[in-house]
Image 1 (cartoon, helix red, strand yellow):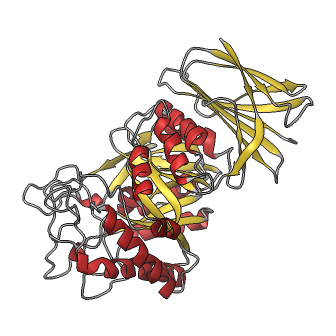
Image 2 (spheres, rainbow, N blue to C red):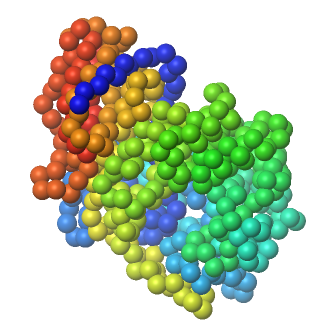
Amino acid sequence: MSDERVIDPQGAYTWDGWGTCLSWWANTELGTRDDLAAALFRLDTAKVDAAGRTVELPGLGLNIVRYNLGACTWTDGSAMVESPAIVRRKQIETFCDGDAWDWGADAHQRSMLAKARDAGADLFEMFSVSPPWWMTVNGNPSGAERGDQDNLEFQYQKEFARFIAAVARRARDEWGIRFSSVDPFNEPSLNSWHAKQNQEGCHFTLGAQEAVIELLRGALDEQGLGDVLIAASDECHYAGAARTWRSFTEDTRRLVGRVNVHAYERDEGCRSRADLRKAVGEAMPVWQSEYSEGEPDGMAMALSISRDIRFLRPSGWVCWQPVEALDWGLLDGEYDDQTPNPNGGAKGTLKGRVGGVNTKYHVLAQYTRHIRPGARILNSGHTNTIAAHDAASQRLSLVTVNNGAQRTVTYALRRLTQGTDIARVWVTDATDAPGARRYAREPDARSQDGILTLTHGAGTVTTMEIDAV
């Protein structure tokens, strides 16, 4: 099979970068590991300890870091209620128990935050999954008794906003971390957050979201953080994000500096992605702020990235947990806290290790190592190809996912270059078959008179890079 893809700079937009959330994996002792910081946030080859073996990996060069503002404390006399289904690493320690502040809390996650900064990450966002337990209706940071009930006490709405702003100010002044944005919600419209959930969570009605956004803007300004934008609302699905945005008042919309959305809606026809972009308008920045699934080969992830960029046009793309069990991570995480406690009080410690590397780590490298922050995303002419141009280096990068049979693709580059150019090529096979390529450098290809033709094997992700464009 053969097709043609015309690369067109018309309508290009600027790329903020690629990222990851910290949260659960960095809440364990993995948050103290330099090798993981190197693999995730640098571009050099990294040597990672995986179950006692040293594995060499291409650094992903992620530059966006999302920090999870916790909700749990275990101080003497604490009345916090723990879900019987939660495990210890999913309980994030907060900085205030309602009476006193403890800025030494959440040491592991803060450790990785600093390591990411030192490795080169330059965009930081703080997000809340649940208000601190003592601000909730039932003292349980996993949610209210019913999933359709708000769990932030009305009387604490202002205190919640001030709490977020106080931590952002402390991060700027004492941690050397400037959060460019804060998001007070995490999938707030879902009816899934209840007292027996297996993670932290909080439902917010539309009115509660609007109230918190307004109060948060005031609290940030009071702290001298007028340059910190509010992102919202981190809804679980594109369709839900569009409904929330359309339901916000104009006053609320003016307070939101970026729309965040999660990618847990497959949306293979891409109607929901396109509708969300239509709802927010072309000028509103969007981040796909959380993506994950339990498919280790990376094909579903590559298709989701391509669909997002073609139809949603986000400026940032963020994975949820890079080190997670059951094939949900880029790296397989092995933790000792898999058994919840039916009597409350999460079992396990904060120990963890890397057990192995999933193919989708190498699939993500095909994108993150070549489409860099500041590049312009071009119209590629096809959903399965992403085209990006870096003006500083005059480099054109093309990344194509082929989820079908072998296919020969012609890339028409005449609107960018009409000469004869060398294209460097890297390939990852989205399979565990013997001899499968993992971010492997392949023989160079050549474009002639602005035409580049390449044959893509079945089930592959291929990057092509051309200089002096």
